[in-house]
Image 1 (cartoon, protein in one colour):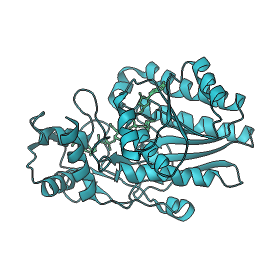
Image 2 (cartoon, helix red, strand yellow):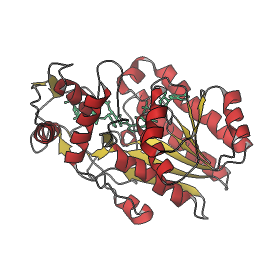
Image 3 (spheres, rainbow, N blue to C red):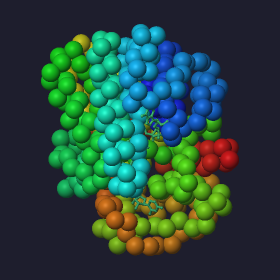
Image 4 (cartoon, rainbow, N blue to C red):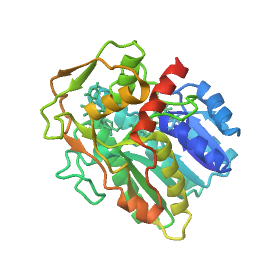
Length: 332
Ligand code: NAD
Ligand code: UD1
């Protein structure tokens, strides 16, 4: 069985659907701090299959043990974590505790139960302010906020642990900017309060819940002056986890690191225009000051994932903006 920590969240729920479609047996654990129980029914409805759910917290080791005692877990896909950059600056201890201590607990319990395979959700944030694009996996790592530092610390912990424990194997997946939703519109990204990230913000302007998108700067050295990112459809990203699990099924052990991005850079204005065109809705926007900590350009060289996993992003920008809007409409 495969355990998904944080499996009711945005990326976890889409990955669960893909795993169930492939016939895998799944256990999800989630403390529901950033997700809802309804996600369970939606996942089941889309995939026409069931899974086992535990409401549990990574910080509670005894309840983690219970999951491993009651199920034969062969591999863990570790999504659970806090992920809001701004909040991590205000509440650094909560981020270190939840993300780093939570992962240490998980690794200790995995060891107790002889479970030696993990796929870990890392982020392009570990490249800090990259010296060039496209970004390859061997580029220098650094961070600019506590959230990013938790990801980098966990990567380091996994490296050290793999050196000490020769049975252990881990795929570290560095996600770029996941957007969009399952084409059914039944699962997607629904942040609480005012969204920080671009796509959910645009969706709420489109639905009239927010008035106007603020575009953070149009004086970057990019094709139209607005920030360039590597947006990846969440379903493509989810499929990358299946390929990573296949990689871990091979005999060798150690640490395998992959960028999961489309390899294409789109600007904020490209996204706004694509959304308007695909969905026939005008997005009000204004140009404002740059957001502190933002970089001009960030996109992946995803060649390694293609060569070693046989994975690449297949969906288009049009798919991403259409599915994001479909989710926003069906969900509300
Ligand atoms: P999400 O918040 O939707 O999902 C994370 C889930 O983990 C939530 O359901 C939450 O309730 C759960 N959780 C958090 N702390 C927990 C704990 N201590 N015990 C049990 N459950 C806990 O986030 P997501 O977008 O699906 O991201 C999944 C992972 O991918 C995270 O680790 C995130 O840092 C990483 N990541 C996300 C992005 C992105 O843009 N969404 C980009 C790069 C990396
Ligand atoms: C964010 C996270 C980063 C994480 C990444 C993955 C922040 C600061 N960084 O990156 O750690 O790894 O998601 O998904 O949250 N923009 C606007 N107006 C808005 C919102 C965004 O113009 O209201 C612009 C930003 O300046 C940026 C682009 O849109 O150029 C994308 O922003 P966002 O969706 O927040 O993602 P990132 O900042 O790339």
